[in-house]
Image (cartoon, one colour):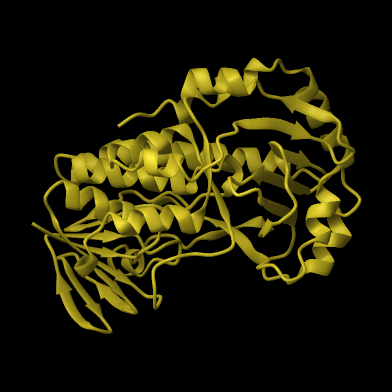
Length: 359
């Protein structure tokens, strides 16, 4: 059996690993000149670590990760709005692993036969019969895996009437800083958020999310203007961004599709269910997709198992983003009061539908 995987990101490479280990002959077509990514961290949550364990790669990821569970949510002043119990989270769900995205991609890449990887190939069209037209010619497979992201050529080719991605209303900066931190924290302001997590090499991954019109630009100066007066260590993080790879992207989500499969084609990751980053589950769900796709008894079963779950995660992430990005003072005041009143165990319980998944 032969599979053509369109896209060499986390979902595509994980799908290639899973299918290869299930006996498929795999070809991975990636538009970029080489496989890899720079400039961002990734929280591999317990459900995703279990997916990586199913691929035989969980321990390799743990060796290159910091393992702190999230500590909670603070206000810009530094006051805690919600504290978690990291020990309880680990006991209930398992380990977290904060890694650099490039490290995860390297681990996935190394688990795929070298002759299966074809970088520098631009896919033009995917057909339901398993034909893929691209800059290197034509590839055919018994299965085509569309792992080509939120602007998926696979989805546009095969799901021509599918809705386009929609702007979520906010824009996100991401960077890796040399300023160290001790724990993973997210801070909620008025229409603004800031999060940071330690990486295993002593550096820090941080992100900043702001309500903004679609397409608005703004670099390091805008980042400092918005966040340099927030609680420590945020000023040090934003003041140290000069000379780093500071990324800024608008945030999109994909309206629900009626199916993730059509003919011989199946969608995984953002191509199927692009979601806002509020739960940190985008890449985690792509890893789950890969494991289930390779193990499912046909594409109909893959769709039955994955579509309800991933669309549930999309909804939960969207709702959390709406609340986190309230800007009206009255709403923010009510939100913060409610967060302070909730018991520590509430976060742990609320995450059960997302984190309890196992292959």
